[in-house]
Image 1 (cartoon, rainbow, N blue to C red):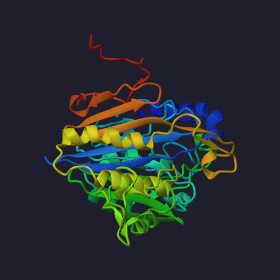
Image 2: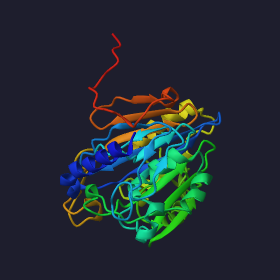
Image 3: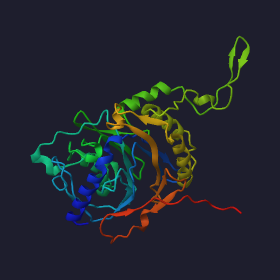
Image 4: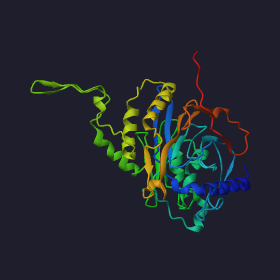
Length: 369
């Protein structure tokens, strides 16, 4: 893709989404499952308070990319040429990724963190070594194969405070989760203007508070187990649990970010370690069902940081499952129960320019008679 077209597309996409900006909200959940056959499966939900109109976005190798600099203009930041092909989900038709996987099995996404994300104060003279926050994922996935490479590279660049109209003329307040083909996981945050990269032994990430606080909260649920509890005996009298599920009694079931983190942690760690990667792909869809937000369950007032200034209704716009062994990327949109698939192994190595795929497909069923 040439620089001129890329710049025109980015500007046009941002301008189009400006009128929707006040409705923004986001409560995403992500996790990683390990297969018994040396594969890993990533799952993630995308919640938003307005139609993202996400498309499956494919970025081929050797594509010229324009970094957004401190003046919020494309091309004034760190420009680069893609090293790896990537498939993932965008928003508002913009040539960026909020979720995706590359041909080397590096997979991850951007999750909203409006209460904690504060980016680096980059001087105009350093603009050419910086990118916009909304470009963090597409830069990482098109440039690197492992989380260790990402950790090294992000200490050498800056993420600036450039504004994006689609985020109500603010910086996109996000943090990034990444997992590589060997199962290593990290979280990349910008807190109080400083880069913070944290190894993630849980493979789980949600939204605010800061990721370290999410990890510290785990100990408060050390009593939880997927093993059923025996009856409580008091002075010879036995009191049986009312039903199965007693081991996870107290597992938070609400939509708060810390609650979703704990729920995702215990649901993922309870899956059988003997499951193959293919079986973990199926398990991931069942786990994601625990985080699906139906229409009307969350109404965001304008005063809420996740409401973006005017509030809105938050739903699970789409869910993703990615198998980084077979390089299969699966998507389920809110409007249907269809599961759409994209095989990264079939990306044309000679393809030129970013490609967008419409995911608005009619509901389909498999007839059994």
